[in-house]
Structure formats: C-alpha cells, structure tokens
Amino acid sequence: MKTIAEHFPLDYLLFFEAVARHKNFTRAAEELNVSQAAVSKRVKFLESWMGVELVTRHGRAITLTKGA
Image 1: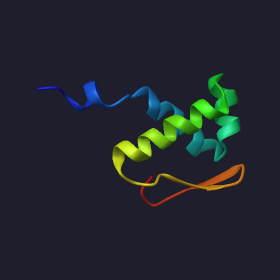
Image 2: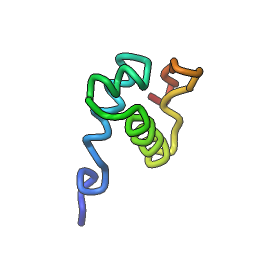
Image 3: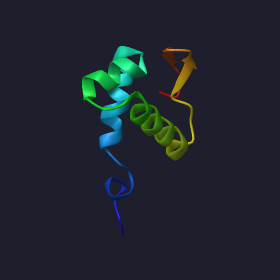
Image 4: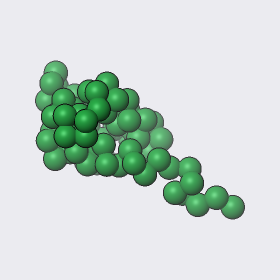
C-alpha cells in the first residue's frame, strides 16, 4: 500500500508556502527561481488534489482562504 507521500508531490507545498508568505505568485516565483506560471500551476494542482480552494486570486495579489 502506498503512503500519502508517494501520491502527493510534497515539493508543491514549498511553492504554496512561498505564495502564502508573499501573498503574490510573482514574488514567490522569484524566490523559488521559477516562472510565475509554474507556481500558479502547482497551487492549482494542490487545490484540485485537495478538493478545496486555497487562495482567492485578485489580479496580482491573493488572499488565503479558510481552506488554506
């Protein structure tokens, strides 16, 4: 039987944590040395995987939801 770690991309949590701290996808991407699109895609994947909205997008800024 596989553990949750084998199904869940734990490195995606690093991306979400940076977004949560900066409350901005672009700043999180700069910190992680990846594109803004890469950060956004990973957060969207987490939201899909968990079945809950983690952030509310407001143009360039975001707010965390209660699900986060």
